[in-house]
Length: 296
Image (cartoon, rainbow, N blue to C red; front, side, top):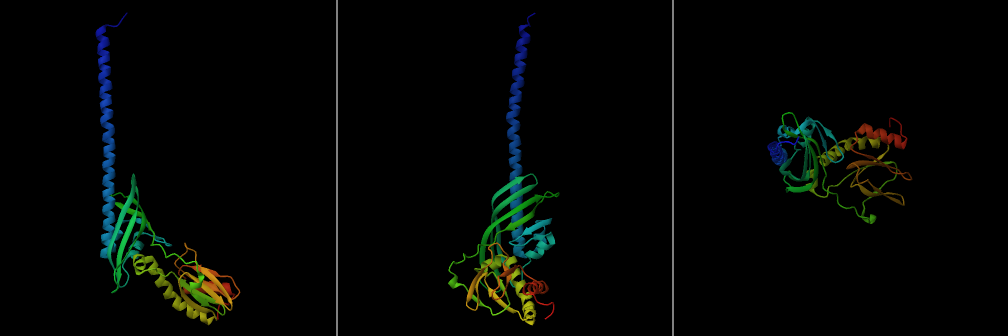
């Protein structure tokens, strides 16, 4: 039996209405979802940018309490050749040193990717500081920050790392290198010489390493002389060692710590120790290298 023509028309009409309604829904719902996502991403970008500005403002005020709130409680700070864990340690790291003043600071993001409650932020930091009565100096380099959105919906830094300004290019001509002359077992304390005051001002980690090395070295070198070991100081991480008529060039690896100690004796290979060493630790290494007794 053939269907009634009225039924057929009604069915076709209903199908058209259904597909038209569905198409309209798809057309409206998809842009609405994309718009919501775009709106959320924009809000996240604005919030992260505001947190970056809050960090800079707190740093310029030397307000470590406010600065600490920009970091997660379990945050990890990764300055060059160093790792600092936890909000309190980070607050101590950014506290101004003696006779230091932070005049300006900014973080300019060049790429920000937000995925859920995590964001990857890559950009350029610029810092202007002043030590004592010296002229203010400015430095700038790249940074990488991992942000996390915590339970209070605030964005905080979970990982924070950056580059220090590039070191001056080393010369291939060894004739211009400083010469350290030795006549017996010797320990040479060496350190990176900042190419400018701006590098030292913008890198608290470098300044701290240099200060700590000189502080502990003053005690260590006195104790070394009791063992008959020469204790010398040499600015720079590349120099010539002369013993008699023999000359050898020492060059610290580019990616090594900014301070170190070179153990050397006539006719023996170099042995370098990197990072700041407490007196007892360095003396133990020296006794082992030179075959010295525990007591002078």
